[in-house]
Length: 392
Image (cartoon, rainbow, N blue to C red; front, side, top):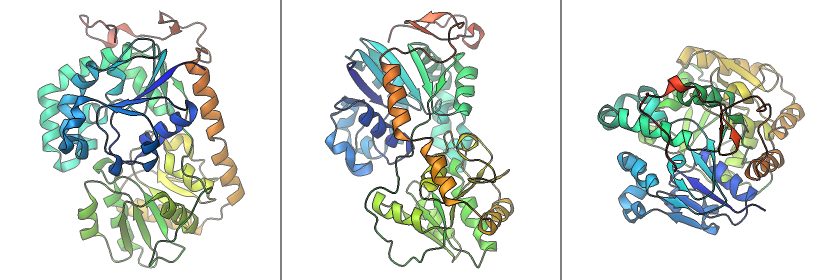
């Protein structure tokens, strides 16, 4: 097998991107994981068995526990990182694609940096520090980001909407390889005390662009229904203070509790601006439908009327009406499970191994120029005329 190393932005939280890294570790057993910051208590326990190699920035425990404080330092951190392997697979939503490599570089992009290109949506009303950082450093960081993207030999993305962003921002044609649902019914399940089955579930990190506050507020008009919110993040305490009485904000839960929540819910709801719609797939693997915002990655992972329903705006009346439609609907649990299986781990593992071994992208025969042996379409006018990708 090809000698592969993995690179990831930071391992400090429990999110979909970190689950993808675990899937990549299953794909490339024994691969070292290079990262800027590593906080094992804050991320998935499975990383304890991995060869994680954090940068010198990790010596600051404050930054490891609060990675957003390190944003102005991350570009330089990865610029100084050298990954020695035949192939470096860089899992990134902003930084890891800037690592310098001795072999080929494959970028698995979850999305171009949200805080850099979608600042208002990502940081919300309280993100003054992030807005200031973008105002002061944004031009330089966007140029660095584009040069880092163009240093890749191969660009892979998780969804069609991210493929469009990569095309628009970098002028690159990327292959879509959706990640598998990492949490499935196989495994131990543990009930959450004080909850009876039949609730609606929202599984999300609690960040402004996830719109969880809009979901909790919607249940003020659904007094006969219950909502359970599972996930941690900066908005946790605010949501606990403002949630209606029929909403239970649990905070972060373990995988055992999360399996029970999926199996015990009537369906899930998500109003977030997602790059990849992971939670509907996890719910579908338990035979549960989803009601989601008609946006982004959800368009790839939800079939309207078969595995769930869409709503068109993340506002309280629209979300409430969508939840009512979900609860009144009749759903085929086996069809839902079959849908989830089409995104299974075997497909992901097989394709990522092919890519690491040098298999060409589907339909790339007429694309040029060729970069590093792979066809990447570059639109020259997406870059400033004095920008030139360098060896990274």
